Each structure stands twice: as structure tokens, then as C-alpha cells.
Image 1 (cartoon, rainbow, N blue to C red):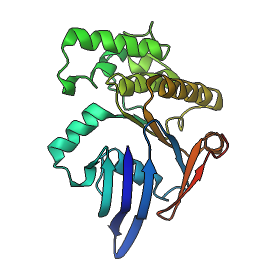
Image 2 (image 1 turned 90 degrees about the vertical axis):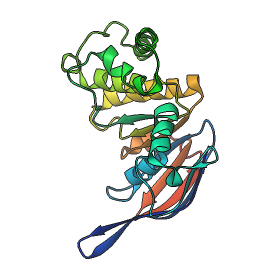
Image 3 (image 1 turned 30 degrees about the horizontal axis):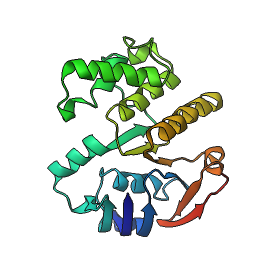
Image 4 (image 1 turned 60 degrees about the horizontal axis):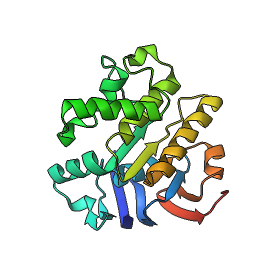
Length: 227
């Protein structure tokens, strides 16, 4: 699935050079569930952006199924993101003027899927996250937890190979956090995809079957940590 080789990301901040990632080597297999944790500013979200093709490394290779994302032209990289990678973010990123169903359908538009099939697949995806009766609700008419479920449905509706989640429970209370994690883990098992999640929540990190810790741009990986 993923093979990262000497992935380095440097930023210039004033007169200083910041190493967000400093020579990361990491392999992630098909169907793996990896949790990435570490202090704020340690590089964990930068790593997730590399995995999703949302940013490119200064040096190194980010290989997904034999293709180096870092070297792809932007048009091909956009196609890989649209077809193969689902994203869930802390801030939901729903379009406020669209219903839940319409928000989920937006993930299918770049794939050229016809309107009727988009509606059908969006309804099925929302039903799979427990929102089958909220298809016509706007984001403002839903709780934070419900909005995150819409975002999860949007990520899964295109049937990706990879799900990347950046602090998906960061804006939720503890009980809602557990519900969202239950949904994500159930869908990961049902769909057999690769699930990579960034979190600052130690309770989630302790349950990870594989845990990567990033500090000052360097990574360590523990197998079966807390699982």
C-alpha cells in the first residue's frame, strides 16, 4: 500500500528552517489501521497530508501502490485523491447550503457518476452511519456528531482504498468521540480499507493496533500497541 522513503519536509520561517518531517521511513500495508500521535507541531498532520497527496515532500518518496505521489503531475494527483483516498477532518468541512445527502454526493461528482446513482449511493452511505432519516437536513440542523457522520459518509461513498482522518474527534465530547470511533472502526472492518488517523487523544492511541509517534519530525512505530 504505502512505502515512504526518506520523506523530508522543510519550511522557511523568517530566517529559520523548520524540519516538519526529517527523513521519515514508513511502510503501511493493505488493510492496516495506523494511529499517528505526537505533540502539536511535531509533524503528524504534515505526514497525513503527504499520505493524502495534499502536500509534497521537499525530499523523498511517498509511494502508494507503486506510484510515487510526490512525483505525479497535479492533474494525476487530483485523480488519485478523488478515486482512492477518503478524508475526514476535525472541522467537518460541510457545505452549509447543501443537505446531508447533497454534501455526500459532492465526493462522487469528480468521478463522473450520474445523478441518480449519486443520490442512491449517498443515501446508502448516510444510512450506514446512522443518518438514513436525516438526508434532507442542513448542517446547521444537525449536532456536531451528526455533522461528522455526514463527513464520514462523504469519505466512504466513493469506496476508497485509503481513509485518512485528521483529529476526527477533536471537536467532540467524550461520549460522541466513542460513537464516532465505533463508526470509523466498523466501516474500516466492513470495507477492508487502510485506515490512518492522526490524534492527540491518548485514549484512542492506547487502543491502536499500530501506533506511530512523531516528535520533532522523527518517527517511531510500535506494533500492536495497546491492542
